[in-house]
Structure formats: C-alpha cells, structure tokens
Image (cartoon, rainbow over all chains, first blue to last red; front, side, top):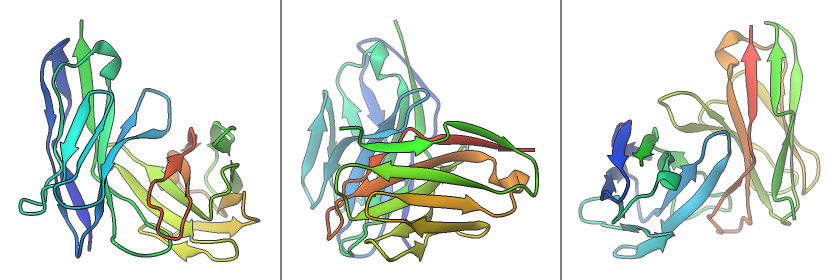
Length: 114
Length: 113
C-alpha cells in the first residue's frame, strides 16, 4: 500500500534560519505529492503540490521538488518567520481514481523563535 | 463562500452514546471525505464518498457510519461511542473526477469519557 514517512519533530528554529523537513514515500505508479500546513486550532490548508516527477511546487517562500529516483518530496524554506510556526504534513494521492484518497505522514511540528 | 463547514466544534460524549458529525461544502465538489487525527499519527481516512449516492470505507471505518445526504452534505455517525474514538475529526472535499486537491473543514474535537 501507499505510505508517507516524514521527519519527526518537533523542530525549533530561530527566525531567518533555513528549514528542511524531509519526506519520503512509497507508492505504485506516479502519485501526486502535497504539503499541507495546520496552524494552531485550525484545519489543514494546502501549502504546495507537485503532480509529476521533477515538478517543483512553491508557495509563500516554501518549495519542494518531486524526486522520483529517491521517492522524496522534501520541504524547504530559505528564511523562516515566527508566523510559519505550525504542523506540516506531507501527503500523497494515487495516480488515478475518481476520489483521490490522501495518505498522510505523521506531521512535523515547527516552532520558530524570534 | 464558506468552503467546508463542520458542526459541532467540540463535543463530549459518554461511552455508549451516539452522535452525528455534520459536514457541508459550498464549492460544488463531487467527492467528500472524513478523517480522524490522532497525536503522532497524521490523519487517517475513515470513509469517503466519490460522488453523490456512493460511499466507501477508508483505512479505519470500524465503529462509524456515513451518509451522503446530497451533493453538499456528508455526515459521520458514531452509533456507540468508545474512548478509542476520542480524536479530532476533519471533513474534506475535492472536485473529484481526478481533481486531487482536498479542502478541509476546521475540525470537530470529540472527547469520549
């Protein structure tokens, strides 16, 4: 079956530090890959996505590249802000199907200190 | 445009009680989903509905039932609540027909004593 493994947290960084959260996946075919973010007390919001190999998703200064050869989709940001403090989830959906079920990683808690 | 809405926001139940969690979306999406979120485990799919009139089991369906009332609404029912069902429940929707981005509601926090 499909699975997602992501870097365990919590991660604590100082403002303006570089962020990497690792994510690797197991899936058949060519899944679509996602990063979702959950701010305290809220639901999940889509941060970025990539639908095929070598695609780079980007949003709000965050980037992730779909690496088929290493089955990875690592999240990066060059300079984090306090407002980036949240839980980040890596996820995938299968290549086909009318309802594209999401498989999530366990989440990584990020805290950014001023 | 409210997106995905869920009621209630918080609920406390005693073991054996029943309740229904409500979810509605106003984006004209075809597919809807129910997830539960437990510490350290990410979100796990309980049930989903690919389109109006269809429902299917996800990863953790035991102890739950669902109803796709119409295109907008998708409810989750706990017939006899157990402490193991203490969790945060999220509803989500997607356009379906291959559209893969899911949009999430704010969640329902459920405590079963």
